[in-house]
Image 1 (cartoon, rainbow, N blue to C red):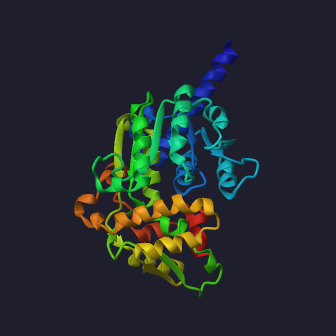
Image 2 (image 1 turned 90 degrees about the horizontal axis):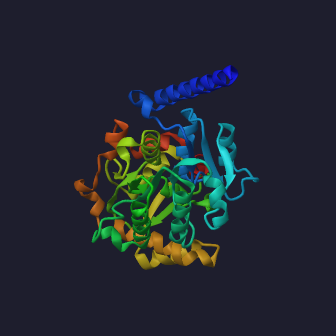
Image 3 (image 1 turned 180 degrees about the horizontal axis):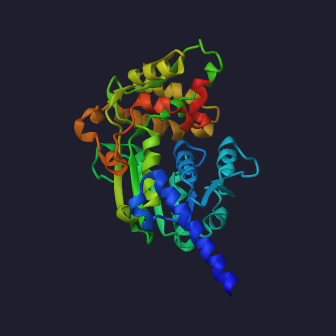
Length: 352
């Protein structure tokens, strides 16, 4: 019996030491006693947000981080790096409901980035029900700016409306939650407009296409969203049943964004603004799979139309939630592009 008591005391001491380490890493020493210690499941760990959140949790010394992959036996760069830091890699496929239960076993918190697949919003209700059944205690979801603001101009975009439907389901569920509604990601120009035709030829121009009509756009750094998410996950108490709006410091034009990419990558990068009908044709011609055309083009064009309204140039568009939670101002585009060590291969290609 004395040996059992001793083992429990040692285990308790190790958990306490881990909590001290995590608190120190993410600047939450004053909340040591309320810091989360249970298993966290991160979806979308191959994406710019899930990867960064998993990285931060592991780098801070969180003792139990689980990430899901469709084919965990074929470990990718992402899974290899995260598993080497202590992440548990499991089989998880949004399209396969039979993978949900095992992925959520003994999970206390879920960080959810919805998948970028056709009919993605149709997979969310089943996943949310699985979370409820598994006894998940806290759910943090990434959404889009003003997704749940009825009669808002952003409701014109189907992508935003789908997020709103999922957010509504989450808010009506039995699981305590936090929703992080972000504006356009700074990484979109690298991930969504991957100019593979430029290849390794650093002299070949990289052209980004859009239809923002010269308006300034509010881009937010994925580093900021990940930092907010990590803080919210680790110290959930003040954030439960709250929705935060995450925006960049100030809006910039797509021309300026292209210039920043050119400066940091030392490659010729240009932005070309096209009429909507020409942009639709350009996008359709760029897909190798006919099945991808309709929904991906619809989402992209919907967001480009929102950019062209100039709504994001208004000072009232900017939120201060990042500053309130992280105790610092949001990153600029230059700061995001300088932090290549935090990037995924999907973003780094332009610097290689």
